[in-house]
Structures are given as C-alpha cells and as structure tokens.
Length: 116
Image 1 (cartoon, rainbow, N blue to C red):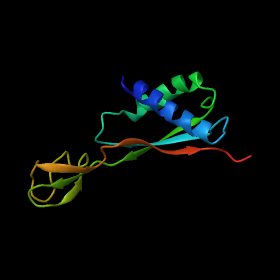
Image 2 (cartoon, rainbow, N blue to C red):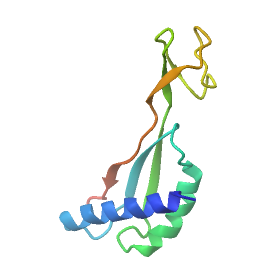
Image 3 (cartoon, rainbow, N blue to C red):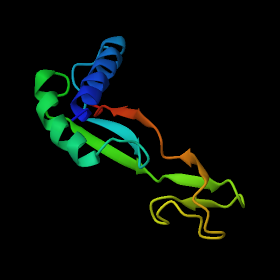
Image 4 (spheres, helix red, strand yellow):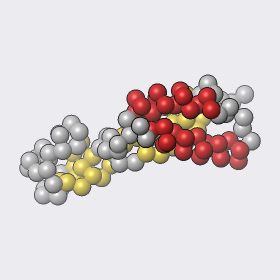
C-alpha cells in the first residue's frame, strides 16, 4: 500500500507550510488524485486517519480528496473522451490508441486553516 508513503510525503510538505507560516494546526488538507494514477482514494482516507496521529499539526484534521477524471485524446481521430467511462476506447472511431491528457497527477491542492 504505497498510499501510506504518499501520505507521509504529504505530511512533510504540509509541515513545511505550517513552519513557514507560524501555524500550530491545520483543519484540512486537500489533494487532487487523478483517475489514471495507481492511487486508491479509499486507501488514502484510511491511511490519513493513521498518519495524522503522528503529527500534532494534523491531529483532528480532515483529508479532502478531489478526484480528477482521466481524459484521453484519440490518436486516430483527435476526439477527447473520459477514459474510464469509455473503457479506454474512443467513442467516435473505436480506437484504443490514445494519449492520456488529464488525470495522471497526485498533488497537494490546498492546506486549510480555520481563522480564529
């Protein structure tokens, strides 16, 4: 389960933000996860509850996951289409030959802090 390794990396990056901004705690971490990654959102959620206890600034915070659709561009006809919904096959020409143009990233989108 490589999601734990990713989450520890997220925690380290968030810790830098916390230190640079003189924060003590955060309320939420928002991450974007592309459908075309090997990252399983449910495993991220489960893992976050485990690792957040390892860091005082994360304790009690929430992990918000924005899933980004995997989009492909057909190499045969140029049509852009949602890969998962179309099972990887171009809905116009039936080709399986495509470039993945969206949904391959995993990154921290936002660190939320409640104003006091």
